[in-house]
Amino acid sequence: MSSLCVLGLGYIGLPTASIFATKGRSVLGVDIAPEVVATINSGRIHIQEPDLDVLVRAAVQSGNLRAATAPAAADTFIIAVPTPFTVDAAGGRRPDLSFVEAAARSLAAVVAPGNLIVLESTSPVGTTEKVKAWIEDELRQRGRAVDGLLYAHCPERILPGQMLKELIANDRIVGGLTPEASARAKALYEIFCAAQIFVTDARTAELAKLTENAFRDVNIAFANELSMICDRLGVDVWELIRLANRHPRVKILQPGPGVGGHCIAVDPWFIVDAAPAEARLLRTAREVNDAKPGHVLARIRAQVAPGAAVACLGLAFKANVDDLRESPALDIAVHLAAEGYRVLAVEPHITTLPVALAGRAELVDLPAALARADAIVLLVDHRAFGSLTLADLAGKALIDTRGQIR
Ligand code: SAJ
Image 1 (tube, rainbow, N blue to C red):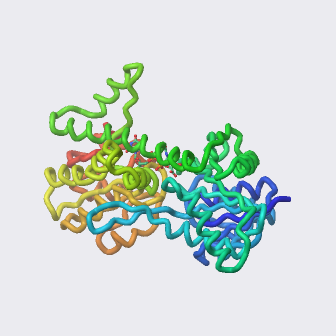
Image 2 (spheres, protein in one colour):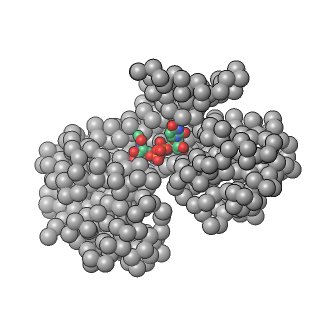
Image 3 (cartoon, protein in one colour):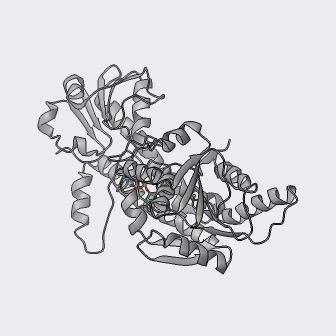
């Protein structure tokens, strides 16, 4: 039975490791955080995602999934660690590959000829080649041969909130540094992927993943820019988009308080960084989306003054998830608190306020917020807010960034 070692047990690595384990593969999951390792070994999870708890429990109970803080020998290694960006003094965004580099270098102690090393982390073009170089560098330092290792990039595409369904149902792209690596990677994902797996080279696979998220970012920027134009012109943007989308070739996305999460708000910068002169539309889209929280704050200030109680409905980066990373909703709530507003945060997916709001806001339930607030700011279209209507607001100021309350 083939064995796997998955580095990084976050939103991508954990479901991936677990699904291989439930398909009968022996999987070692590796994470640098000992508390994450302990949680998973006890059959529990440290993140929220529908049905992931069931999958992880089944994987651990089967005896096929075990977690540790360091890698061990295996046939296949999958790197699924974060690839954030850093902001330099001039405001430029540079990809931060330190987690990928550390994971790659850690593999030198355990790899053997014939092993396949897969990079799943969303990465700038050329990163798979760097993974190879980092591992070879470590091997040479140990006086070991570098030949016989296979490398491929197989980007993940799963949507938070419906990861387990998409893990199986989405088409995948695999891009090897050699045709042999591509073939091995394709066979690997065929273990659980029920959709088509397309083979290309590593650089195309890297850019394809970045392109998918940049495409979505540009389209959301179009919707967000429309919403700002509509605010200036006194037009209801939701009505406008609904009507425009009745054209057979128009499909405008939905405006919101900005673009959050650790993918769409990050990945286009990897393209901008690599081709700054050419990536003009992508850069502008990022700037439009990043400017949207400021626009929402200006709308709030125009309706209520500091000192007022403002109910912030939702802190997560999007609907029906608990993930607050890079969340424009959280950003807006933090700014309001800093400006002297009394922030009543309503976030049904969390039980304690994040550090940025702790001691500066109150975490309350929806009825309490509706009773106490002077203004209601709908930031996230969580299902829990779906039944709210204008009649519930009793004359309070309303800033609805999702067009949900009618
Ligand atoms: N958003 C809008 N309006 C929309 C759609 C989204 O404002 O019409 C906002 C959301 O509220 C959120 C942000 O955009 O703040 C991103 O949300 P999302 O649901 O569009 O995407 P993510 O970041 O959860 O997941 C994306 C997905 N990529 C694409 O759809 C092209 C997913 O398939 C990727 O696997 C994931 O990035 C990733 O890990 O890269």
